[in-house]
Amino acid sequence: MSSSMPTFRALFSRDAEVYADAPGRVNLIGEHTDYNGGYVLPAAVPQRTRVELAARPDGTVRLWSAQSQGEVASYTLGEERRDGTWTDYVKGMTRALAQHGALGGFDMRVDSDVPVGSGLSSSAALEIAAGRALRERFHLRLTDLQLAMAGQRAENELVGAPVGIMDQMASVFADTATALFVDTRTLAYARVQLPASAAVVVIDSGISHRNAGGAYAERRAECEQAASRLGVRQLRDVGIADLHRVSQLPSPLDRRARHIVTENQRVLDTVDAFGRGVLAAAGRLCNESHVSMRDDFEISVPEIDRLVAIAQATDGVYGARLTGGGFGGSVVVLADAAQARTAAAHIVNQYAATTGNAGRLLVQPEG
Image (cartoon, rainbow, N blue to C red; front, side):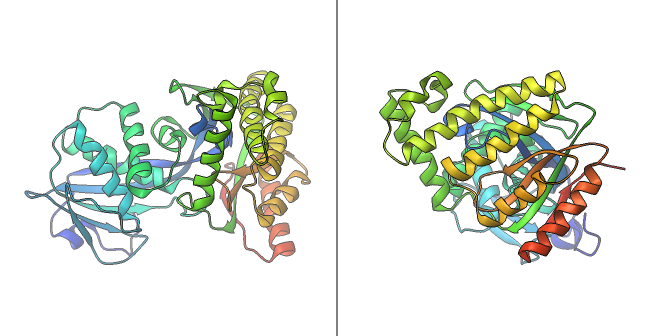
């Protein structure tokens, strides 16, 4: 917790009863495939969102965040309304969790070091941390998987961001030591061990990203149109062998669908490459993923492309790509563990020198 910020007692004149937290995530590969019923490969990041909570005897909810440093916000259970602030994620959770048991009012203090706008899913970290605290305090009967699904509903239905379930699944189930392979249609998942010689580096471009914007919803709608024209339920049902049919779709649906189809295959191939310890192959898949996001899905921006290019040209780097919903945010770099720290510093310095943007190193190997 931030030492200079008011404590729970200072804010609410009593002690917290429950403490909970949840991590942000970085997606190694598998972008925009989740709402198409496809495959993803995220991992948790060290940064986490932490909440303290105490129940109230009425239906009032009071919220305060160390990051907003504003006044205590409040709303009434059952009357959740979107207002475009960070509190919408908590409102969405209380509305989604009401079907799992009786919620009472509560006071909540939030503190987080998951950077907002960096594509590391600060929203899912808040949803899951709040959900864990509410589940414990009000004895809600829901599994971890149901908690992830409630987080997705909160974001879809109240916040208005049409995201898939990857972020919430990662915040619930992922850890920083392994990657989490998720089949987003069946919600089956498995942990994938990265080779010991591999290191994952995450660098923030300094260009803020936002999933609730219109471009994200537009991409999802285009994918649904492509699936409909191809006569399938979701683009998950289209394989590499069907790319000739994809190429006959009108533009830009052909390119949107091609990204999803090839990206799903890249996730499967990356899991295989990690299993065989072939980092060069995993790096090539990472690079191919970025080209697909840039050219076919059109969710990159020039600053991200420059950051990726610098990373890909750096000694000790196997591959680099945009990570997250796009239109800004961060890049993920797959590097050789022995050279990762030196490579990361070089990438950040070169990015600043050539663009004037101050990139931030968010995740790097220890040592």
